Image 1 (cartoon, rainbow over the protein chains, first blue to last red):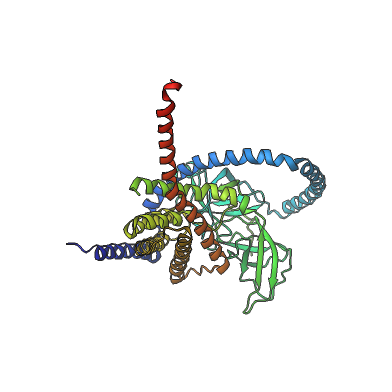
Image 2 (cartoon, helix red, strand yellow):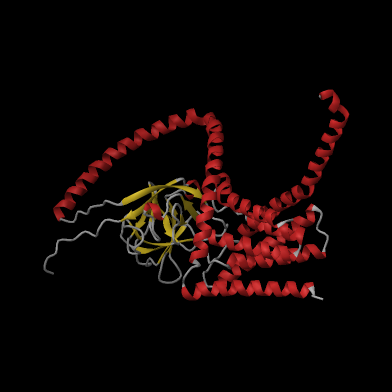
Length: 281
Length: 175
């Protein structure tokens, strides 16, 4: 007669060993379980797309009715903001024109013609420990592994894993494993922005204690990581302190509101690197 | 609990976890609906069912998530087995007992999950308060699901009997 308890123990042992082998294989080779992952992701992204559509319409209808209560006051405040922003836009335009003129003079003007595709976020992460999102664009739209994802506010993240035909997984910048090369816009001090346990903020690491960093400084991508193009806004310095070792402790509040992420842009092709005027050194 | 029911439960939990939960409460919300299904199945059907549900649910969750495939599977396999073993040894029919099982299972899952990531040197530090919040949320939802599973069939059966009784009494008049 088979001892049920012993057999259950054997099944448990076999399954645990199987998991350990699976994890070890990925850690040792640095690869992923491509076929299994791709199939599951491809199939489930269709379910997510359908669910997202139904859930989205329900929430939109609800929001539409409840939102009407405060819409008048909000409208007045928005008009005020718009007037102020239009004024600022005029100023910025003037500055941009001046900068463009200077660039032309220096012969360093680049053709900033990124090819992008717009995408809608259809799902969040399946586990509460990670911060990824699923978008409704995939390899069929030109999305590739490591394609940078941005929004009008700034950097959102990058595509991880092999995208499906009609969907892709995006690792958000606030994920604890995410990182991006960054610089302080004002002083050009370089560092590395990484996700943090506190998911509202990101950390900027490896900035020397000798560098000048102040609260409110804007942090932008440096472009050295080969994923994010140079000059995209990451966020604003919210906390800066002298670190224990050689580097400062800097916390950055991202410009992108990751909790309300709906529409994003995926950079599918970067412009060719500008050919600087070559001269004798 | 049959296999199709468990599969449907896992699929529904994953779909809700990735679509509805972030929409209503924002992404990164501390609830693990797959874990709730795994522990529910383990309590109702025993350690073997809990083990397999944990394996399948955890692996599916890993593939849809951003981490190493297998870590969540391993954690949920162990939790499913332990919760099933606990459920088969002790009487956990009352909601307050189930609350403790779900809460404990969430903590064990956290220890396993973060422990494996710690071994992999991925430095996944987390706050104790976040983990306790997640365990509380999982336990609350888990008890609600378990109570619904216990009470649901009885309510449906009573409604069916009442309807049959009414049809018997007034069926001729209605016709």
